[in-house]
Image (tube, rainbow, N blue to C red; front, side, top):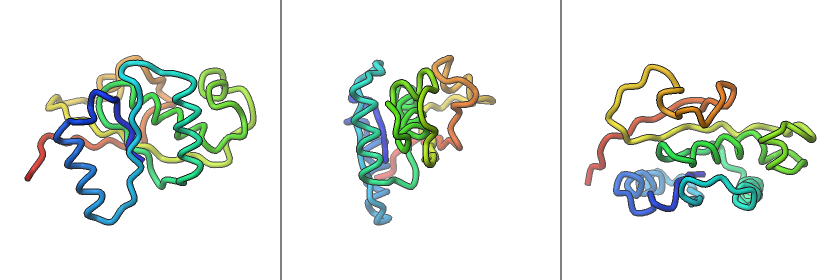
Length: 139
């Protein structure tokens, strides 16, 4: 499952990443989320799709809110509780499983810790399992 903000839809590097995943015969669920906004309805929709498609990993593309959605879906998709309440307040039944998530970013900057990449939007417990820095698209 690849999650990106709507503004990144036409990003050439993201498009090449999707193409490469398809070339490797990996089923890709390409999800677009609103730019710079974290909405309850979107989180619920994304969690529902994650349960239906059962992805092996969630890729958050970009430095924006996509990482927040990926983190929330990763930890809440397989909970029988309300996704929003589970993510924000840790209220409800524990998730039956957690989907690993990775952060894919295209910056040329060098980062020494997650806080530099993700800013203050994610708490330390919400760090991705790993990150992939993509700096070019080869055609």
